[in-house]
Image (cartoon, rainbow, N blue to C red; front, side, top):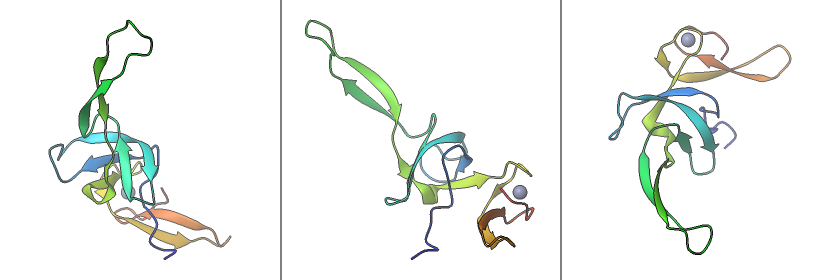
Length: 107
Ligand SMILES: [Zn+2]
C-alpha cells in the first residue's frame, strides 16, 4: 500500500530500540524499503571473511554492519533531537512531507 512506506531514509540518524545494539545511535547508510531494513553505521556489526583479491594474498576478516529491521530503530528528529515517530503531512503543493510527531516540524 502506498502509505506503507519506510519512514527512515538514508542519512537519518536513528536510535536502536531492540536487539544487542539497543540504546545506540547511528547514521543510516542505506535503506532497503522492500525488505523494511536499514543499514546503520556501527550497528549490528558482523564479521565477514573477505576473500583475497589476488592470489597469494591472505583473506581477512572484516567487520561490517549488517542490515537490521527498520522497526528496531526510531528516527532521531534533527529539529528537536528526540527519538520520535514519523508522520506525514501534505503541503499546499500536494507534496508529502515527513513530520516529527514530537515537535510537528518537517524533517
Ligand atoms: Zn522533532
